[in-house]
Length: 121
View 1: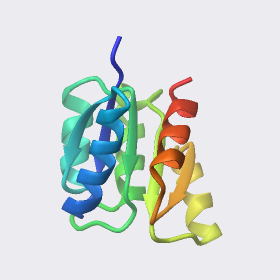
View 2 (view 1 turned 60 degrees about the vertical axis):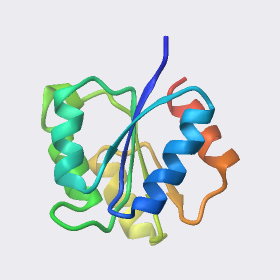
View 3 (view 1 turned 90 degrees about the horizontal axis):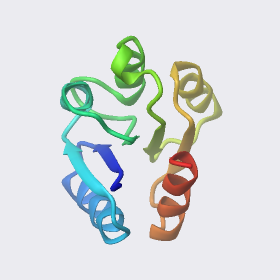
View 4 (view 1 turned 90 degrees about the vertical axis):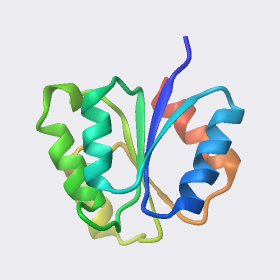
């Protein structure tokens, strides 16, 4: 069965690059333009994993993760943060909020696929 990945990023070019990489590997991709849009999409349809940016308008990555984890539908979904930030404090906050991993932009396609395959088991 095909796995669905939600990608949440305010940068259209990053969303496209992530989506193309995942689609070429056989995943279905849903794109969201910010944390608020991502929350709405994550709660309206089942997703197998989420890749989210940290710095976004309306609702940032941490806010998105916390809001999603408060909803029963968002409890077991693996979340990876993909951000230009690499501060340990932010990474720790993301883990506490419920993220499984953190990748720093720019990323390689191979690394992105390896991380997604790992979190999806």
